[in-house]
Every structure is written in structure tokens, then in C-alpha cells.
Image 1: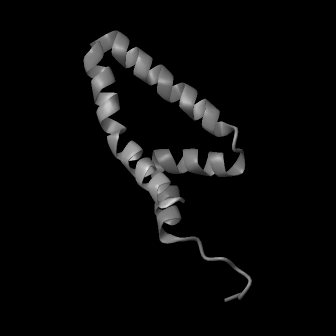
Image 2 (image 1 turned 45 degrees about the horizontal axis):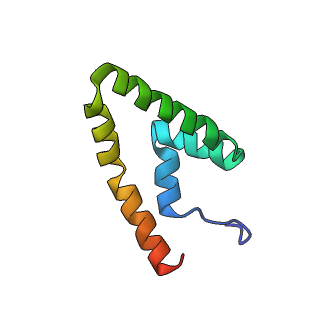
Length: 80
């Protein structure tokens, strides 16, 4: 084994191995501007969901983002 090779962390390997999210993560790693396309797709899906199912879709989206916001607040509190 070559000593110059960097070992990818386990979390990144699992993320890259995931079929849908792995492809998005690899694209974002190659070109950071790809995240804007992913955000536009996410917002479009939320808008179409609200159009089809009403406020229930918006509430479910907000409920799905609760862990993300919690982790963000903890990271801000810890200064990372």
C-alpha cells in the first residue's frame, strides 16, 4: 500500500455508496455550483407537493428539517 494515499472516512464512503444521495454528493464535490441546482429541485418538489396536498406537505417538509436545524444550532453553539 502506498503511504501517500489518503483514506476516505467511513461516513463519506457510506454517503458515496448511497444510490441517489451519493451521486449528488459526488457532483457537489466536483463542482460546488451543483448545490444550487439541487436546492432548486428541492424547492420545486416542495412547491409541487404543497400544490397537490396542501399545507400537510409543507408541515411534513418542516418536520423533516427539524434534525438538520437542531444539528446546525448545536454546531453554532459549539463554535464549529
